Length: 79
Image 1: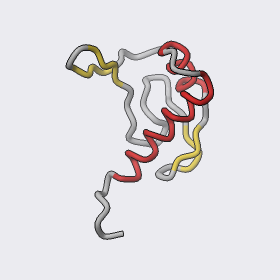
Image 2: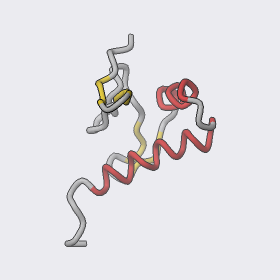
Image 3: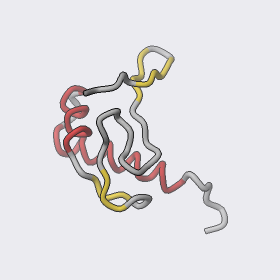
Image 4: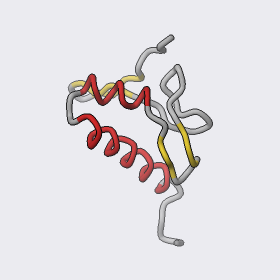
């Protein structure tokens, strides 16, 4: 659709990924984080995808950030 912003599919995927984990584990932040690390997601943009070891989406453009106060910070690498 011509009226959609080019990033609309990515925003949709991001919301669906978070919603999947919220439905799966509830709203506990640590459990949601673990769900994001452990789950393979079905996305509009990339098909089946999961987060890699540095918290980016394998083959994709998603990055995880911590939000505290008024700022968002990139999460440190996890090995």
